[in-house]
Length: 505
Image 1 (cartoon, rainbow, N blue to C red):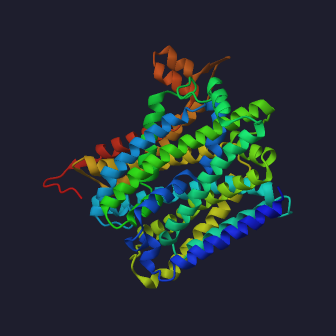
Image 2 (cartoon, one colour):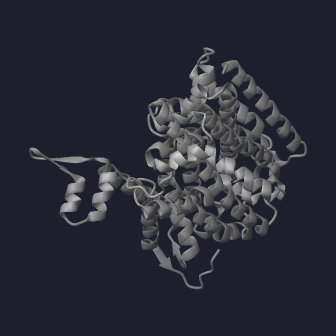
Image 3 (cartoon, rainbow, N blue to C red):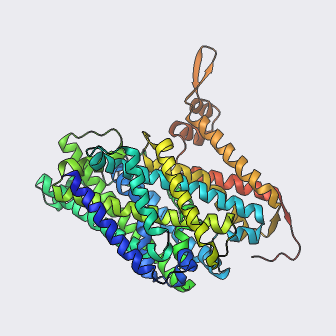
């Protein structure tokens, strides 16, 4: 596969997206950017949200992790499915009842200004780092396939991709990405099917034979000893879904662009079903890739690189090109949505914009550019050269930032007490620091005691704390978000007070 062929595709793809952008922004106003004028068709939103939620990280990382963890990721996905029901029937009705543009405005109405700023800050931190991490992985693959062979530096590759995304989102915002994400999700799903077919062709075996071999070798095992336990993964999935979807301005902004709550709930329930099917499709592709690598003796430096290695070096030129097409499409779907949501939250929550005010358009565009520039700097100076699986990085970031958000919304919706608004920033930060400290202890495998080394797990076991023995042996995982949320909730409750004639927002 020639690098110039991929580059031509990227330019052609950008032209297509630009045409859609022109069409959707002909009569765009300020509300078009933030809420798509409340006219987004819910079937398109449901389908397009798959691209936003999955991103290039799932496209590459989930398929790559099957070799080591089998189908255990499905335990987590089942938790996500339950979380989507909570979003549909608890959070969305509240967002629509209050007619919110930024979902973090609820925290201002319920608790006060400090809580509002904390909620927005945690989202901005999480989405900025998460979006940059996702985009880094994609640019890394494209750099190896295209830009490096053409003598283009990595930094220029990053800038090129970010500029493309900035150009087609800066004016249309949500109104544009509802349509572009639908196309991008379609391309991604098509790419997965083509890649499965390419493996069958490369092995000269029918799909049914490969599926049988994959199953017999245990790649489809859902419950494995190294998975960390079903309930841990299942509950983590629920919490991460509620936090990273239901309390995330990025994904909820598309829901809020739908005209009414009934259609928004249809959107969320449809999205939940589609997401389950698509994740099963990714896991199936991952099992096929693991089987192929086993037969061919292929080794990679880290799981993230497995899909790209097989697709670009062992598929036909057509298959390799389709892999790149799918990767770029799904990555753009995630990045454009994140950039729009970051701009929205900063303008509405931090700068206190009126979403309908046309005089703030220029400043909003400057904010949009600022987050684009920040993404570039994070990729270059923070993520470049990382040896960790990017999906692990993304969920780690989410666990420490969305945990406090879950606690704040849960307290606001479930507890009929008032809190001291000025203490909320301290409670959120201290809770996170406590979890970080415990996590660091869990990761520290041994403690020097005289001439002997005693593991933390051994100390826990000696004193009968069997759960902590397993925790310190395996380390923290996605369940960090649960501990973080519970600790923050406890802090909010301790510093709360009963209020006469309490009126729930």
